[in-house]
Image (cartoon, rainbow, N blue to C red; front, side, top):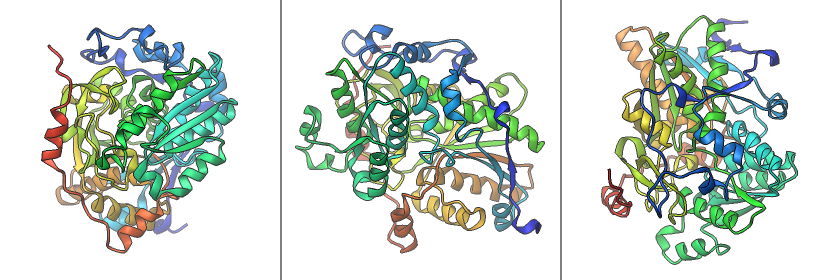
Length: 457
Protein backbone atom coordinates (compact mmCIF):
# COMPACT_ATOMS: atom_id res chain seq x y z
CA UNK A 1 0.00 0.00 0.00
CA UNK A 2 1.21 3.54 -0.79
CA UNK A 3 2.76 5.15 2.28
CA UNK A 4 0.75 8.31 1.57
CA UNK A 5 -2.58 6.67 2.37
CA UNK A 6 -1.70 4.09 4.99
CA UNK A 7 -2.96 4.25 8.53
CA UNK A 8 -1.19 2.17 11.14
CA UNK A 9 -3.63 0.34 13.39
CA UNK A 10 -2.54 -1.23 16.67
CA UNK A 11 -4.90 -3.90 17.96
CA UNK A 12 -4.84 -6.01 21.09
CA UNK A 13 -6.41 -9.46 21.21
CA UNK A 14 -9.30 -10.21 23.56
CA UNK A 15 -6.86 -12.09 25.78
CA UNK A 16 -4.79 -8.92 26.13
CA UNK A 17 -7.71 -6.77 27.26
CA UNK A 18 -7.15 -5.44 30.81
CA UNK A 19 -9.22 -7.19 33.48
CA UNK A 20 -8.93 -4.48 36.14
CA UNK A 21 -9.75 -0.79 36.37
CA UNK A 22 -7.06 1.52 37.73
CA UNK A 23 -7.84 3.68 40.78
CA UNK A 24 -5.54 6.70 40.85
CA UNK A 25 -6.56 7.48 44.44
CA UNK A 26 -3.96 4.90 45.55
CA UNK A 27 -1.08 6.85 43.99
CA UNK A 28 -1.86 10.53 44.45
CA UNK A 29 0.72 12.47 46.49
CA UNK A 30 -2.10 14.00 48.56
CA UNK A 31 -5.74 12.87 48.86
CA UNK A 32 -8.47 15.07 47.37
CA UNK A 33 -10.91 16.82 49.72
CA UNK A 34 -13.98 14.66 50.47
CA UNK A 35 -17.52 15.50 49.33
CA UNK A 36 -19.61 17.17 52.03
CA UNK A 37 -23.21 16.79 53.13
CA UNK A 38 -24.85 20.17 52.42
CA UNK A 39 -26.82 20.03 55.66
CA UNK A 40 -24.11 19.05 58.14
CA UNK A 41 -21.02 20.13 56.15
CA UNK A 42 -19.47 16.82 57.20
CA UNK A 43 -17.94 14.28 54.79
CA UNK A 44 -20.64 12.14 53.21
CA UNK A 45 -20.79 8.46 54.15
CA UNK A 46 -22.08 5.44 52.24
CA UNK A 47 -25.51 5.84 53.84
CA UNK A 48 -25.83 9.33 52.35
CA UNK A 49 -25.30 7.98 48.83
CA UNK A 50 -27.34 4.78 49.18
CA UNK A 51 -30.63 6.29 47.93
CA UNK A 52 -28.98 7.05 44.58
CA UNK A 53 -26.31 4.39 43.97
CA UNK A 54 -25.84 0.65 44.61
CA UNK A 55 -23.40 -0.18 47.38
CA UNK A 56 -20.71 -1.65 45.11
CA UNK A 57 -20.48 1.62 43.19
CA UNK A 58 -20.39 3.57 46.45
CA UNK A 59 -17.49 1.42 47.63
CA UNK A 60 -15.67 2.09 44.36
CA UNK A 61 -16.30 5.80 44.87
CA UNK A 62 -14.36 5.82 48.14
CA UNK A 63 -11.92 2.97 47.45
CA UNK A 64 -8.16 3.36 48.01
CA UNK A 65 -7.29 0.08 46.25
CA UNK A 66 -5.01 0.53 43.25
CA UNK A 67 -6.78 -1.99 41.03
CA UNK A 68 -10.42 -3.08 41.04
CA UNK A 69 -11.39 -6.27 39.25
CA UNK A 70 -13.79 -5.95 36.33
CA UNK A 71 -16.65 -8.47 36.80
CA UNK A 72 -16.74 -11.32 34.31
CA UNK A 73 -20.22 -10.32 33.14
CA UNK A 74 -18.98 -6.82 32.33
CA UNK A 75 -15.93 -8.17 30.50
CA UNK A 76 -18.25 -10.33 28.38
CA UNK A 77 -20.11 -7.20 27.24
CA UNK A 78 -16.92 -5.21 26.77
CA UNK A 79 -15.71 -7.85 24.32
CA UNK A 80 -18.39 -6.69 21.86
CA UNK A 81 -16.10 -3.75 21.02
CA UNK A 82 -13.00 -3.95 23.21
CA UNK A 83 -10.08 -3.78 22.92
CA UNK A 84 -10.59 -0.63 20.86
CA UNK A 85 -8.06 0.33 18.17
CA UNK A 86 -5.16 2.76 18.39
CA UNK A 87 -4.29 4.53 15.14
CA UNK A 88 -1.23 6.47 13.99
CA UNK A 89 -2.50 9.48 12.03
CA UNK A 90 0.03 9.42 9.18
CA UNK A 91 -2.16 11.34 6.73
CA UNK A 92 -2.94 14.08 9.25
CA UNK A 93 0.77 14.39 10.03
CA UNK A 94 1.50 14.71 6.30
CA UNK A 95 -1.18 17.37 5.81
CA UNK A 96 0.31 19.40 8.65
CA UNK A 97 3.86 18.90 7.40
CA UNK A 98 4.90 18.09 10.93
CA UNK A 99 7.60 15.76 12.25
CA UNK A 100 5.33 15.04 15.23
CA UNK A 101 3.76 11.61 15.57
CA UNK A 102 0.03 11.70 16.34
CA UNK A 103 -1.82 8.70 17.78
CA UNK A 104 -5.49 8.45 18.62
CA UNK A 105 -7.39 5.86 20.62
CA UNK A 106 -10.76 5.42 18.90
CA UNK A 107 -13.74 4.78 21.17
CA UNK A 108 -16.41 5.33 18.49
CA UNK A 109 -16.45 1.58 17.81
CA UNK A 110 -18.75 0.91 20.79
CA UNK A 111 -22.48 0.15 20.29
CA UNK A 112 -23.36 3.67 21.46
CA UNK A 113 -20.63 5.23 19.35
CA UNK A 114 -18.61 6.63 22.25
CA UNK A 115 -16.51 5.85 25.33
CA UNK A 116 -19.55 6.18 27.60
CA UNK A 117 -20.38 2.46 27.39
CA UNK A 118 -17.23 1.76 29.42
CA UNK A 119 -19.12 2.98 32.50
CA UNK A 120 -22.77 2.54 31.52
CA UNK A 121 -22.37 -1.25 31.37
CA UNK A 122 -20.83 -1.70 34.86
CA UNK A 123 -23.26 0.82 36.35
CA UNK A 124 -26.23 -1.10 34.95
CA UNK A 125 -24.63 -4.39 36.00
CA UNK A 126 -24.18 -3.38 39.65
CA UNK A 127 -27.64 -1.83 39.83
CA UNK A 128 -29.25 -4.98 38.43
CA UNK A 129 -27.43 -7.09 41.04
CA UNK A 130 -28.95 -4.95 43.79
CA UNK A 131 -32.51 -5.17 42.46
CA UNK A 132 -32.84 -1.79 40.75
CA UNK A 133 -35.60 -1.79 38.12
CA UNK A 134 -35.15 1.71 36.66
CA UNK A 135 -32.27 4.12 36.15
CA UNK A 136 -32.62 7.86 35.61
CA UNK A 137 -29.95 10.11 34.18
CA UNK A 138 -29.11 13.31 32.35
CA UNK A 139 -27.37 13.66 29.00
CA UNK A 140 -25.84 16.57 27.16
CA UNK A 141 -24.98 15.69 23.58
CA UNK A 142 -26.82 12.39 23.99
CA UNK A 143 -23.85 10.03 24.02
CA UNK A 144 -24.25 9.17 27.70
CA UNK A 145 -28.01 8.77 27.39
CA UNK A 146 -27.48 6.43 24.45
CA UNK A 147 -24.87 4.41 26.35
CA UNK A 148 -27.06 4.00 29.44
CA UNK A 149 -30.09 3.08 27.32
CA UNK A 150 -27.99 0.39 25.64
CA UNK A 151 -26.76 -0.97 28.98
CA UNK A 152 -30.23 -1.01 30.53
CA UNK A 153 -31.54 -2.94 27.52
CA UNK A 154 -28.96 -5.64 28.26
CA UNK A 155 -30.07 -6.00 31.87
CA UNK A 156 -33.82 -5.59 31.33
CA UNK A 157 -34.13 -2.33 33.26
CA UNK A 158 -36.15 0.77 32.46
CA UNK A 159 -34.17 3.88 31.58
CA UNK A 160 -35.36 7.50 31.72
CA UNK A 161 -33.20 10.30 30.31
CA UNK A 162 -33.40 14.07 30.71
CA UNK A 163 -31.57 15.63 27.76
CA UNK A 164 -30.30 19.21 27.85
CA UNK A 165 -32.79 21.28 25.87
CA UNK A 166 -30.33 22.80 23.37
CA UNK A 167 -29.04 19.35 22.40
CA UNK A 168 -32.51 17.80 22.42
CA UNK A 169 -33.61 20.40 19.87
CA UNK A 170 -30.55 20.15 17.62
CA UNK A 171 -29.95 16.39 17.68
CA UNK A 172 -33.23 14.56 16.98
CA UNK A 173 -31.46 11.43 15.73
CA UNK A 174 -29.60 11.02 19.02
CA UNK A 175 -32.98 11.07 20.76
CA UNK A 176 -34.24 8.42 18.35
CA UNK A 177 -31.21 6.21 18.98
CA UNK A 178 -31.87 6.39 22.73
CA UNK A 179 -35.47 5.37 22.07
CA UNK A 180 -34.37 2.50 19.81
CA UNK A 181 -32.55 1.07 22.84
CA UNK A 182 -35.80 1.31 24.80
CA UNK A 183 -35.36 4.40 27.00
CA UNK A 184 -37.65 7.39 27.51
CA UNK A 185 -36.20 10.82 26.68
CA UNK A 186 -37.41 14.19 28.02
CA UNK A 187 -36.34 17.68 27.08
CA UNK A 188 -34.82 19.44 30.09
CA UNK A 189 -36.03 21.58 31.79
CA UNK A 190 -39.30 19.64 31.74
CA UNK A 191 -42.77 19.90 33.23
CA UNK A 192 -42.33 16.42 34.72
CA UNK A 193 -40.40 17.43 37.86
CA UNK A 194 -40.75 20.06 40.56
CA UNK A 195 -37.31 21.50 39.81
CA UNK A 196 -37.94 21.45 36.06
CA UNK A 197 -41.15 23.44 36.41
CA UNK A 198 -39.36 25.94 38.63
CA UNK A 199 -36.51 26.43 36.15
CA UNK A 200 -38.97 26.91 33.29
CA UNK A 201 -40.27 30.05 34.97
CA UNK A 202 -37.09 31.90 33.90
CA UNK A 203 -36.55 32.13 30.11
CA UNK A 204 -32.76 32.11 30.54
CA UNK A 205 -33.04 28.43 31.55
CA UNK A 206 -34.84 27.30 28.37
CA UNK A 207 -31.67 26.01 26.62
CA UNK A 208 -31.08 23.86 29.69
CA UNK A 209 -27.81 22.68 31.20
CA UNK A 210 -26.33 19.47 32.49
CA UNK A 211 -26.75 20.81 36.02
CA UNK A 212 -30.50 21.27 35.52
CA UNK A 213 -30.89 17.86 33.85
CA UNK A 214 -29.04 16.23 36.74
CA UNK A 215 -31.43 17.87 39.21
CA UNK A 216 -34.44 16.46 37.37
CA UNK A 217 -33.03 12.94 37.15
CA UNK A 218 -31.99 12.96 40.82
CA UNK A 219 -35.42 14.17 41.94
CA UNK A 220 -37.17 11.29 40.19
CA UNK A 221 -34.72 8.69 41.48
CA UNK A 222 -34.93 9.91 45.07
CA UNK A 223 -38.72 9.42 45.16
CA UNK A 224 -38.72 5.72 44.18
CA UNK A 225 -36.83 3.02 46.16
CA UNK A 226 -36.60 0.80 43.05
CA UNK A 227 -35.14 3.61 40.95
CA UNK A 228 -31.56 4.82 41.12
CA UNK A 229 -29.56 7.52 39.42
CA UNK A 230 -26.61 6.98 37.07
CA UNK A 231 -24.05 9.66 36.23
CA UNK A 232 -21.97 9.69 33.05
CA UNK A 233 -18.96 11.64 34.29
CA UNK A 234 -17.49 13.60 37.26
CA UNK A 235 -17.66 10.98 40.05
CA UNK A 236 -14.69 8.80 41.02
CA UNK A 237 -16.28 5.49 40.04
CA UNK A 238 -17.13 6.81 36.58
CA UNK A 239 -13.55 7.94 35.95
CA UNK A 240 -12.37 4.59 37.30
CA UNK A 241 -14.36 2.62 34.73
CA UNK A 242 -12.92 4.68 31.88
CA UNK A 243 -9.31 3.80 32.72
CA UNK A 244 -9.57 0.71 30.56
CA UNK A 245 -8.92 3.17 27.70
CA UNK A 246 -5.55 4.23 29.06
CA UNK A 247 -4.57 0.75 30.17
CA UNK A 248 -5.09 -0.52 26.62
CA UNK A 249 -3.32 2.52 25.17
CA UNK A 250 -0.24 1.82 27.30
CA UNK A 251 0.03 -1.64 25.76
CA UNK A 252 -0.63 -0.33 22.26
CA UNK A 253 1.93 2.45 22.48
CA UNK A 254 4.44 -0.20 23.51
CA UNK A 255 3.47 -2.14 20.37
CA UNK A 256 4.20 1.02 18.38
CA UNK A 257 7.58 1.29 20.10
CA UNK A 258 6.93 4.85 21.32
CA UNK A 259 6.05 6.72 24.50
CA UNK A 260 3.91 9.87 24.33
CA UNK A 261 5.39 13.26 25.13
CA UNK A 262 1.93 14.85 25.09
CA UNK A 263 -1.40 13.33 26.19
CA UNK A 264 -4.35 15.47 25.16
CA UNK A 265 -8.03 14.90 25.96
CA UNK A 266 -11.24 16.90 25.91
CA UNK A 267 -12.82 17.75 29.25
CA UNK A 268 -16.39 18.54 30.21
CA UNK A 269 -16.98 16.52 33.34
CA UNK A 270 -13.67 14.75 32.84
CA UNK A 271 -14.28 11.04 32.22
CA UNK A 272 -12.71 10.85 28.75
CA UNK A 273 -9.57 12.72 29.81
CA UNK A 274 -9.25 10.68 33.00
CA UNK A 275 -9.79 7.39 31.20
CA UNK A 276 -6.92 8.05 28.81
CA UNK A 277 -4.50 9.87 31.09
CA UNK A 278 -4.73 8.29 34.56
CA UNK A 279 -2.82 5.08 33.71
CA UNK A 280 -0.09 7.21 32.11
CA UNK A 281 -0.07 9.50 35.15
CA UNK A 282 0.54 6.41 37.29
CA UNK A 283 3.64 5.69 35.24
CA UNK A 284 4.69 9.34 35.43
CA UNK A 285 4.35 9.40 39.22
CA UNK A 286 6.50 6.25 39.33
CA UNK A 287 9.21 8.06 37.37
CA UNK A 288 8.97 5.81 34.30
CA UNK A 289 7.74 8.42 31.76
CA UNK A 290 7.24 12.18 31.76
CA UNK A 291 4.50 13.26 29.33
CA UNK A 292 2.64 16.56 29.52
CA UNK A 293 -1.02 15.96 30.34
CA UNK A 294 -3.19 18.62 28.71
CA UNK A 295 -6.96 19.02 29.08
CA UNK A 296 -8.81 20.77 26.23
CA UNK A 297 -12.01 22.51 27.28
CA UNK A 298 -14.50 24.77 25.45
CA UNK A 299 -13.75 28.48 25.59
CA UNK A 300 -17.40 29.19 26.40
CA UNK A 301 -17.48 26.78 29.38
CA UNK A 302 -13.92 26.91 30.80
CA UNK A 303 -14.28 25.39 34.26
CA UNK A 304 -10.57 24.61 34.70
CA UNK A 305 -9.07 27.76 33.20
CA UNK A 306 -11.63 30.29 34.46
CA UNK A 307 -13.54 28.54 37.25
CA UNK A 308 -12.73 28.71 40.95
CA UNK A 309 -11.58 25.74 43.03
CA UNK A 310 -14.34 25.60 45.63
CA UNK A 311 -16.98 23.37 47.14
CA UNK A 312 -20.09 23.52 44.98
CA UNK A 313 -23.16 21.48 44.07
CA UNK A 314 -22.92 19.06 41.18
CA UNK A 315 -26.41 20.06 40.04
CA UNK A 316 -28.22 23.37 39.62
CA UNK A 317 -30.97 22.82 42.19
CA UNK A 318 -28.52 21.93 44.97
CA UNK A 319 -29.69 18.35 45.52
CA UNK A 320 -26.26 16.67 45.38
CA UNK A 321 -23.43 16.65 47.93
CA UNK A 322 -20.96 19.54 47.82
CA UNK A 323 -17.81 18.62 45.88
CA UNK A 324 -14.46 20.43 45.86
CA UNK A 325 -13.95 21.14 42.19
CA UNK A 326 -13.20 23.78 39.63
CA UNK A 327 -16.56 25.38 39.05
CA UNK A 328 -18.19 28.22 37.17
CA UNK A 329 -21.02 28.12 39.72
CA UNK A 330 -23.92 25.68 39.76
CA UNK A 331 -26.22 28.45 38.46
CA UNK A 332 -24.03 29.03 35.39
CA UNK A 333 -25.91 28.28 32.16
CA UNK A 334 -23.32 27.79 29.39
CA UNK A 335 -23.91 29.08 25.88
CA UNK A 336 -25.50 26.41 23.64
CA UNK A 337 -22.28 25.40 21.89
CA UNK A 338 -22.28 22.42 19.55
CA UNK A 339 -20.20 20.29 21.94
CA UNK A 340 -23.15 19.59 24.21
CA UNK A 341 -21.27 16.98 26.21
CA UNK A 342 -18.83 19.62 27.50
CA UNK A 343 -21.45 22.11 28.75
CA UNK A 344 -21.02 21.37 32.46
CA UNK A 345 -20.38 24.00 35.11
CA UNK A 346 -17.86 21.94 37.09
CA UNK A 347 -14.93 19.61 36.61
CA UNK A 348 -14.50 16.18 38.21
CA UNK A 349 -13.11 16.56 41.75
CA UNK A 350 -10.26 14.14 40.98
CA UNK A 351 -9.18 16.07 37.90
CA UNK A 352 -9.60 19.38 39.72
CA UNK A 353 -7.34 18.10 42.50
CA UNK A 354 -4.72 16.82 40.05
CA UNK A 355 -4.81 20.20 38.28
CA UNK A 356 -4.28 21.97 41.58
CA UNK A 357 -1.34 19.68 42.32
CA UNK A 358 0.33 20.85 39.10
CA UNK A 359 0.26 17.39 37.50
CA UNK A 360 -1.63 18.53 34.38
CA UNK A 361 -2.39 21.57 32.25
CA UNK A 362 -5.57 22.97 30.73
CA UNK A 363 -6.30 25.06 27.62
CA UNK A 364 -9.61 26.57 26.50
CA UNK A 365 -10.28 26.24 22.76
CA UNK A 366 -12.88 28.17 20.65
CA UNK A 367 -15.31 26.01 18.71
CA UNK A 368 -14.50 27.31 15.19
CA UNK A 369 -10.89 26.18 15.66
CA UNK A 370 -12.23 22.82 16.85
CA UNK A 371 -14.36 22.28 13.75
CA UNK A 372 -11.55 23.41 11.48
CA UNK A 373 -9.47 20.65 13.06
CA UNK A 374 -12.36 18.19 12.79
CA UNK A 375 -12.84 18.74 9.06
CA UNK A 376 -9.11 18.34 8.41
CA UNK A 377 -9.12 15.18 10.51
CA UNK A 378 -12.13 13.75 8.65
CA UNK A 379 -10.56 14.47 5.27
CA UNK A 380 -7.24 12.88 6.18
CA UNK A 381 -8.17 10.09 8.62
CA UNK A 382 -11.64 9.16 7.35
CA UNK A 383 -13.52 9.54 10.65
CA UNK A 384 -16.02 12.31 11.41
CA UNK A 385 -15.40 13.06 15.10
CA UNK A 386 -18.00 14.08 17.66
CA UNK A 387 -17.78 17.80 18.57
CA UNK A 388 -16.37 17.03 22.02
CA UNK A 389 -13.05 15.41 20.97
CA UNK A 390 -12.52 18.08 18.30
CA UNK A 391 -11.22 20.23 21.17
CA UNK A 392 -8.45 17.72 21.79
CA UNK A 393 -7.78 17.41 18.06
CA UNK A 394 -7.41 21.18 17.77
CA UNK A 395 -4.94 21.20 20.64
CA UNK A 396 -3.05 18.21 19.20
CA UNK A 397 -2.70 20.11 15.93
CA UNK A 398 -1.38 23.16 17.79
CA UNK A 399 1.30 21.02 19.44
CA UNK A 400 2.14 19.28 16.15
CA UNK A 401 2.67 22.65 14.45
CA UNK A 402 4.90 23.78 17.33
CA UNK A 403 7.03 20.71 16.69
CA UNK A 404 7.29 21.79 13.07
CA UNK A 405 8.78 25.09 14.24
CA UNK A 406 11.01 23.83 17.04
CA UNK A 407 12.04 20.41 15.77
CA UNK A 408 11.50 18.97 19.26
CA UNK A 409 10.56 15.30 19.48
CA UNK A 410 6.79 15.29 19.86
CA UNK A 411 4.64 12.18 20.21
CA UNK A 412 1.01 13.06 20.80
CA UNK A 413 -1.65 10.69 22.11
CA UNK A 414 -5.31 11.64 22.22
CA UNK A 415 -8.63 9.90 22.76
CA UNK A 416 -11.16 10.19 19.97
CA UNK A 417 -14.02 9.47 22.34
CA UNK A 418 -16.81 9.16 19.77
CA UNK A 419 -18.00 9.65 16.21
CA UNK A 420 -20.05 12.60 15.00
CA UNK A 421 -22.65 10.84 12.87
CA UNK A 422 -25.48 12.48 14.83
CA UNK A 423 -23.79 15.88 14.94
CA UNK A 424 -23.85 16.76 11.26
CA UNK A 425 -26.01 19.84 11.91
CA UNK A 426 -22.99 21.28 13.73
CA UNK A 427 -20.77 20.52 10.75
CA UNK A 428 -23.35 22.14 8.48
CA UNK A 429 -23.15 25.29 10.62
CA UNK A 430 -19.36 25.34 10.30
CA UNK A 431 -19.27 24.59 6.57
CA UNK A 432 -21.89 27.27 5.83
CA UNK A 433 -19.91 29.84 7.79
CA UNK A 434 -22.65 30.49 10.35
CA UNK A 435 -20.79 29.05 13.35
CA UNK A 436 -19.49 31.67 15.76
CA UNK A 437 -17.26 31.62 18.80
CA UNK A 438 -19.35 32.54 21.81
CA UNK A 439 -18.01 35.32 24.00
CA UNK A 440 -17.42 34.21 27.56
CA UNK A 441 -19.58 36.44 29.74
CA UNK A 442 -17.52 37.50 32.75
CA UNK A 443 -20.49 39.28 34.35
CA UNK A 444 -22.60 36.13 34.10
CA UNK A 445 -19.75 34.13 35.63
CA UNK A 446 -19.45 36.45 38.60
CA UNK A 447 -23.22 36.27 39.13
CA UNK A 448 -23.08 32.45 39.20
CA UNK A 449 -20.00 32.35 41.44
CA UNK A 450 -21.80 34.55 43.97
CA UNK A 451 -24.36 31.81 44.61
CA UNK A 452 -21.82 29.12 45.51
CA UNK A 453 -22.18 28.03 49.17
CA UNK A 454 -19.53 29.34 51.53
CA UNK A 455 -17.63 26.45 53.12
CA UNK A 456 -15.17 27.19 55.91
CA UNK A 457 -11.63 25.88 55.66
